[in-house]
Image (cartoon, rainbow, N blue to C red; front, side, top):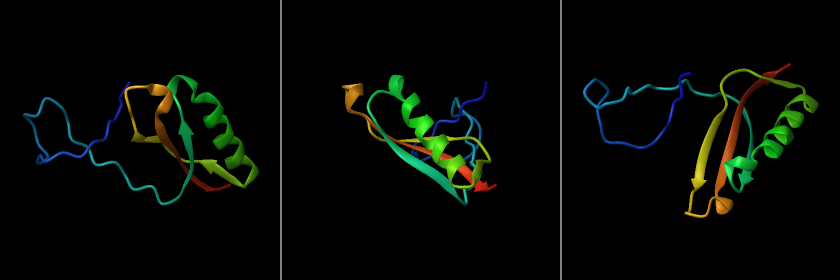
Length: 89
């Protein structure tokens, strides 16, 4: 399984970092939802997003992304934006 993690860094692409730098493709259109709380409880938010996509004439077209907006020590206080690339069905 390949997982991409995103974080700002001050390094040029290349080797020698202990990880690989990858530019992810731009998402031209996405359905998004803000999930509040632990990622252990994210399923209801994902289901809400998937239902919205289907009901509004879209379908998923790529790998979803999570943008962690606030991650305090208490995971129940986390704020995460779930992003699902979409195109019209």
